[in-house]
Image (cartoon, rainbow, N blue to C red; front, side):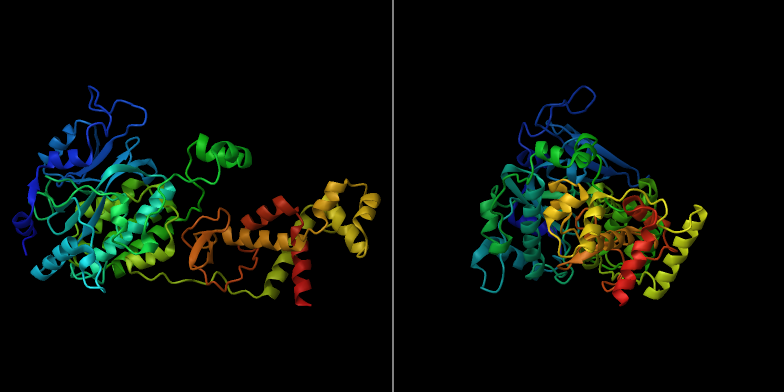
Length: 533
């Protein structure tokens, strides 16, 4: 079926300049200086386009200023060109640099038959008047034919600021509209829905497509509002609040979390996450060769990009490896091109460094098996711990682990007093120890054992013995054990107790020694033997 012909029969074709001018009205972007760069204007940003040369495969990024002149150069070239309906600060298309969303764009593949096309038109024209068990679609402002598929553009009357909480809301409604477009009857790929990123770049109207012709835009409806889109999705997917939300002001965050503030705000460093050995990256390449299939290939390459940045793989290496996978990708379905790769490689930034594992499994279609960390029994762990403790004592020329262990801490004084006086009162502890009332109150109910074992468990989980890091699972999602942020998991069974194995990790030993003293192992042995009784 010829999508261009179907569109021409029904809608008016729009010139690429008129198309982008409608999305980005005058004043949306910065003015251009003599060298073609945006002139810095407070609160005004730029568009970013990406072009890949078909011969050299080199990638170039172009700043789109308010006059849109750079689009002329792209349209007159034979490069594959991509652009998202978003304004950015700076020259990078990282999601954290995104400032305003001017249109919600939906990628729809699999409109292969007249029946698919007719059904899509019914969804668009009838909307809520479809039969009760079929979901219609809001009428898009434009439909773009990209060669093998369609892009539905819902252009907003006013651009939407891309604060994180608003991005989460937009992703929610976009995911639902995508599902309705793909699954109700308009696509032959209804079982392989592709949920692209909100920041996804789309083929620039007027530039070359996979089939060698040019992408064309057609006017379908009017500009939209969030309220309009809400009417076409279930209540749980609707956006009800587009206000910026923050639990803390920057001033309060600076006071409460000075180290975080200095690192993230003042130094603009990426958020914390565990780094992996390169083995993880190359393991994923092997998995791609075994299992990447039609409908999942984009996400497979995108995940490769996230593992690359996670493993410290240079972008140049990632780019080379990704393009070398193209022939294999094309053996697994219809044409998978260079610009598909470019789309996916945009995940090579810190915004995707904690990409959740459940999402990866769902979108790539590749099952990730989990491995046991080790199989030693507690008895073996205790023998190893005692051995290391005794060696450490001997090396330091001491007779016992307690020798020279320093003045006891205040919490230790309170704990020792309570052990000797199980029925004692706080006032008596204050009088006997000479400690202040606030100090005694602070440590009166302190559970040293619980904190010790909690620290040990977290350090063991953080340890990268197997070449990766670890998270905990709560409610079906995985979270970094230290930062609490949703993240990829360490590939271990949920039943794994992560018992200490000092023979495996000097790193754990060092971390525990920093907090609990160099003879922390004896305390560990004591607690473990208590549990055995």
